[in-house]
Image 1 (cartoon, rainbow over the protein chains, first blue to last red):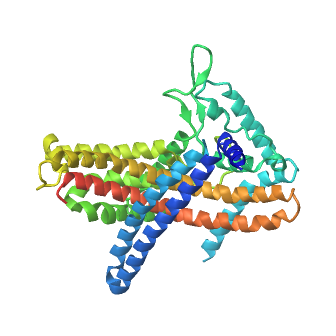
Image 2: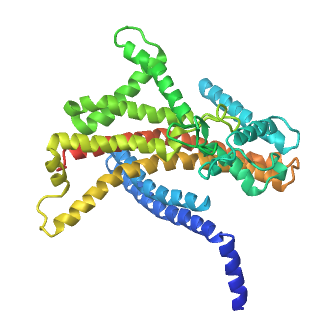
Image 3: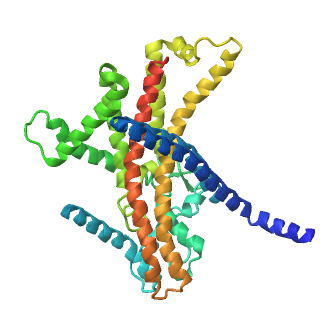
Length: 87
Length: 345
C-alpha cells in the first residue's frame, strides 16, 4: 500500500505534476480572494449609489480604482501561476 | 446602429481571416498554416543553435507537427500562446564562438509596435495641436480633443489642482495615450505567428510597463525631493507623532511601499494585458482541441461555435479592459506623484 503511494509520488515528482497543481491552486485561490474583495466593493458601491444617486460618478470612479487594487493582487498570483506552469 | 453593425461585420471578417488558414490545416487541406510554419521554422533556424540564453527563443515558432490532427493538446495551446511570446527579430550579437545571442541592442518584436504606436500618435495628435491655430477640424481631431480635455480635467486637474497639474498634464496625457494605443493595437486580430504579421501587445511584457513605471518612480522621487528637499522627503515618509522606537521600522516600511507602488503598476498592466490575450487564445485553442478530439469530423464546426462565441465575449470585455487599465495606470501614477509632493495627505 505504502509502496504504491510512494511509486505514485515518485512518478508525480518525476513528471513535475506538482507544478501544475500548484499553478492551478494559485490561480484558483487568488480568484476566490479577488472575487470576495471585488464583490464587497461592488456591493458597497451599489448601495452607495442607491442611497446617493447624485454621487454616482465619484463612487463609480473610486470603485474602479479600488477594484484595480484588488485585481492587482490577484494578478500577482496569476503571474506566479503562469511562471509555474511554464517551468 | 448601422455603423455598429458595419463594425461588427468588419471585425468578424478579420477574425475569420485570422482563424481560417489555421483551420484549413486542421482539415488536412494545406493552405495558410503550413506556409506560415515554413517561415516560422526558417526564422527559428535563422537564430537556432544559439547560446544557452537563446535556447528558449529558438523554440519559438517551432510548433512540432504543423497539422492540428497531429498535435497534442499542449502543442495546440502553445501554438496559440506563441502570440504572446517575445522573440528577437534582429541585431543579435555574435560572440567569439560564432554563436548568436541577445545583447543590448537586440531588437525584439516588441519595439516595432511601440514605434508604430508613436507614429500613430503623431498622425492622430499633430492635427489636434494644429487645430488650435486653424478654425476647422475633422471628426477624429474633435474626438481626440475631447479625450485630451478629459484626461486633463478629470484625471490630472481633479487630483493635482489646476496650478500644479498644468506642469504634469502633457506627460500624463502622453502616458495615457501611449498605453491606450499599445493596448488597442494588440486587439487587432492578426494572422500568422512571425513578426510582421503577428501584431504584438507591447504592454503585454513586463519590460515596457516596467519602463513606464520607472518613469513614475523617478517622478515621485524627483518631484518629491525638489519640493521637500532630500532630507525632508525621506523624513516626510514617516508619519508624525510616532514613538521613536517605531521610526526606523516605519521608515523601512515606507521605503518599501514607495518601491512597491511602481512594481504593482508594472504587474497590474502587464498581467491584465497578457491574461486577457491568453484567455482569448485559450478559447480559440479550444476550437482546434475539439477538432482534434473528434479527429476532424464535420461536427467540429458545431463545437467551434461556442468557443468562437466565448472568444468574442472575452474580446469585448478585453476591449473595455484596455481602456480601463490605461486609465488606472495613469490615474494611480498621478496620485502617487501628488502624494509624494504633498506628503501629509
